[in-house]
Image 1 (cartoon, rainbow, N blue to C red):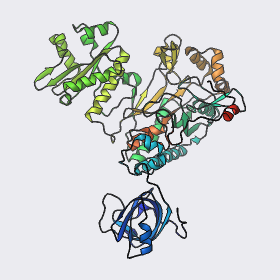
Image 2 (image 1 turned 45 degrees about the horizontal axis):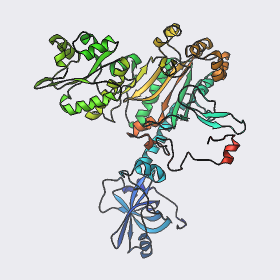
Image 3 (image 1 turned 90 degrees about the vertical axis):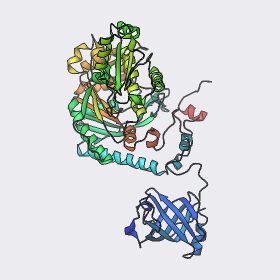
Length: 591
């Protein structure tokens, strides 16, 4: 049951009252956070989207209002009219802690049942309950702050692109299925029996067509959809900041986006990042860090000791190099004492989850050198190993021997894990790097052919074009990723704008002329009528908001997210539909 607001009109927000408002008559509206009845006085914390104000109901002021206040419970929605006064017991924990509101009038706008979850940030309720009652979870100050910061970020992006002559263009949600990337979400067409639309994995083809259309500069904050097996921090629907520019090459796209990143960090985090942002080739990133999204907040760079140990008596190293593999390691400099023998065994088990067969180690302590592999090397070899790692007392050297890809994967992830376990990563330290010159192709073992590492429209490096037919594995792409603190925040490339080169690309990917035309005919047709050089980038907005809010869970920065099984616990989507609905779209389910 609730009362009409009557002549009460909200005049102030709960979290904005300060000492300068003392003496003012105000009307506040919101939810009861908690109530404390001390007999003749009732204190109520009233919450709205801006914060909390303490409301005082005094039985000597109005018995009728006081008796009504006695009925208040958690999450009741109320309107209160009263006078702002100085608070006797100041609360330094909240911005409104110097004042309180002495109530003269109270209206209960709606009562509430006892909520199944507490409306407070430190509630340890399960994520299942949080998602089921998302509308209650979103009442928490932290969640509201996350959504407000997300909105502010979107505004900064829009303002920046508007100032730089980009045009915001909406692209269709119902589009044609694409053959590359993850699975499409398919939508049956009622008016075209047996035919399907796809929800876009990205507006890639459309934004290229906008460049053909002469738009020159385009952007869009857009929903994208991928029907893939979800891992941590993946969502079936996610948001991209999508960008495309005409008459540009790599430097132009990077330069413009560095200005955007500078603006975002300054306005959202109050941090001035250093420009230009460091650049690192894909090859250098893999050689030094084993991953194409290196976290540069700490060192522990790879050192290759293959040349030192290739003739050693240590069979594991010798056999690995004989079979074309490599031996690399990292020096956990200065942190050797932080890892016991048991800890090192745990690190070995961790590295095995990424394909490593084992983990060799050398520990330098005040008592000397401890290592299960030292006995396999002569004095000169072991000295050279220590020199290569610039080893000193207090260091721990971790070494993996295997084929190149396994060493990169296992040692690269181990490097990150060591830093996590040491607790040396700060959320307030931002290290940005552009990764450039990615391989144009990667080999798909299952399909037994080369596939595009990014997409089929990525332009090869000019000097590598002649290798398309003869050495596709050596062709580098005009592609670039922006990596922040070990996470890929965005990626893009310069696109092919020449029909002949695009045909060579399709051929290198194993597409016949018929397949290429069937899948991309409309784009190939458009390219026949004059296509400017163009390129762009797409950022993961959700990931950026995670970075800015220091969130470890992507679901904390999306209003109504899905679970890892792509379901919505609040609405019970996806769900069964009626036979009539299925018949309308000409679909019959298998028994």
